[in-house]
Image (cartoon, one colour):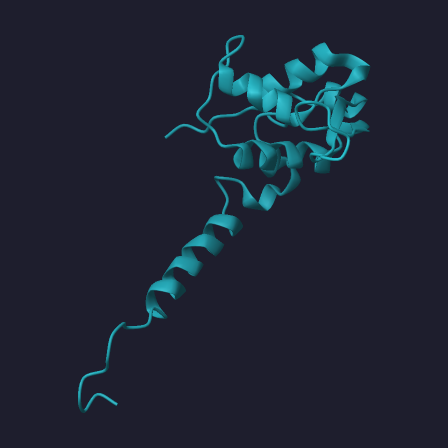
Length: 144
């Protein structure tokens, strides 16, 4: 199954937003609606994990945080604040084919799909889990 990258989409939207920035929630909503050429069946959690890597790399920076209210504008009912991010100079200079497409490998090259520490860790974890799996149910007579 091919790896789907949100990188080109996120970079394009951040460049269009300029200094005013854009909220990751708005980016995700637009992605789910299939606006422009991108449409995805991704979850918000996976999208935000991707966005988190860009924050760690310094490709995006926080511009502002707005306090949001529920519908109707009742000031007593607050929602989570909405944070806006803008692309940095480092993000502008980063290669779309490598750094924006696979940010996890950019941060942790040892976890790359071709090489091995992360995949070895997962393989070892699965082996240990299958060996350590406990039997369910009552023990048979004489087995204790």
